[in-house]
Length: 229
Ligand code: 6PG
Image 1 (cartoon, protein in one colour):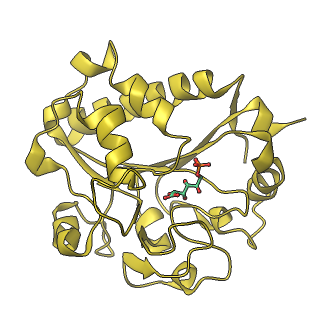
Image 2 (cartoon, helix red, strand yellow):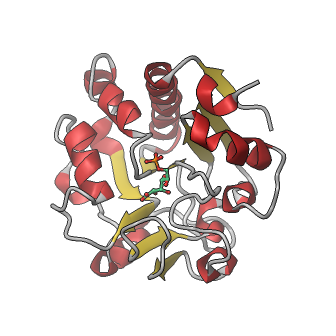
């Protein structure tokens, strides 16, 4: 797997925003809607801030975008630790996505995932899924040796023992991730260099290596510090 390698976090934000904007425009142009699952953690924050700036803030068809998350911490939505709060501050408070098209990944909102168009197997087929990756190769809240990684039927699983705090999370599962039309994994920083190299070699000991869309594209946008070499 060959990633897009950019100089630094600012360049990663720019490239990820451009990549995402292209796919939002394509989805809305082809199907009059874009179903987008945002990532959590720090890395995507720059991309979300960039999408809230010109030209994307006014040029993208935000009124036709439906938003959820690829994982969420089970904390109050206004808790700074929630991925929802991060995306609100960086992006959603600054672009006109209708409120009834934003679905925080919570137990009570799970029925809303039924609005995502399905693939022939009945799985939700997101137009775009954003993911980050941890130093242990986890992605979303799919951690090494965790049973959620083995889930092959449910599209969302609760995780109660995440090694990355907070421990209680909800995550899209591999069936949901791998049904997507396009998945972007954003990786930044030298601390992730070894895990990234192993995932790019498809070392299946690492959860992120299992993200392989069955009928969709997979892109890695990584900075030089994470890529090394
Ligand atoms: C979360 C994320 C998680 C994150 C990685 C990378 O809720 O924490 O979904 O999977 O993407 O841990 O986090 P950073 O981008 O903060 O390094």
